[in-house]
Length: 83
Image (cartoon, rainbow, N blue to C red):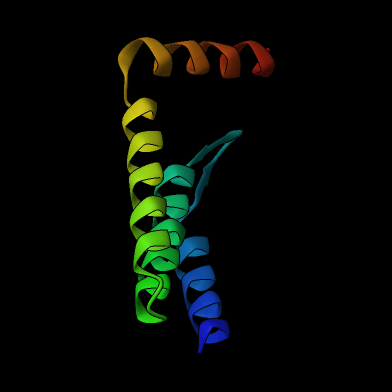
């Protein structure tokens, strides 16, 4: 069953990622879909504590990703690499 989840989420995640010239969009969204599927699979297999811990970690990472001072720092680093 888990193999089918991996195949399905991989297909959906690939459809979320968009390329526009030398820029790529949707990587965070695709990673979030993968993480959500992993947490859901863990709950389905009865691993409630591990799934809750994973959900909290994913939430903290996504919250940190949207902090303005942290986000602008990484955006600048990406722009510096493009040049």
